[in-house]
Length: 211
Image 1 (cartoon, one colour):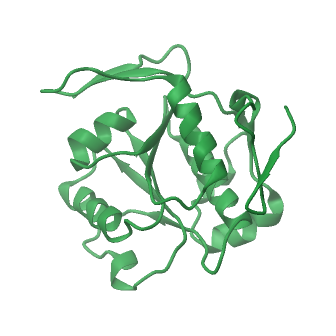
Image 2 (cartoon, one colour):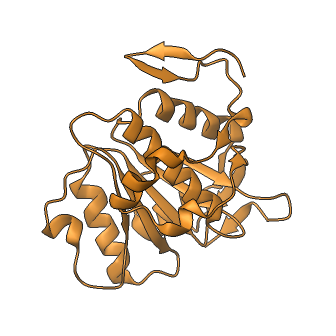
């Protein structure tokens, strides 16, 4: 990998770096703090992998097919590493299961911890309950990871997610979704815009979805 650049006191990848050479793995020295900030235990059980998002075509009823190329997703990741606290909605999907998405979200959370200011990131697993502790408790966070949601989620859970994304619009929000590609999830399930995404899978998984 080429030398890393310095920006605003942080060590970041230069624009010439090949992100696909970048290993997504967790540092044990941050594990305790990340668990304390809500990281799902399943994230730490995932095997490290080389970040290599896949181009995909999303087919949502009533819209023209949306193509999101691998290069665009790589740029999204570079931008996050460069400025981890930009207030964006970032959707992560991996297939055939959400293991890689969980680990990537944890890696991004770790990156935020390393570069944190006065507040720390929070990982939140959404549940079927009508309670919404993030909003009810006035939780402060520099970044949110929102897990356990997908196309099979109940209307209540999806509405909770919409409320959280809206309430915390001034910080980055990383959503781990299942059941479809990132664009389809935000467009068809949440009716909200998505700023960045990563879709990770194997060559055996079909990369075109229709809802």
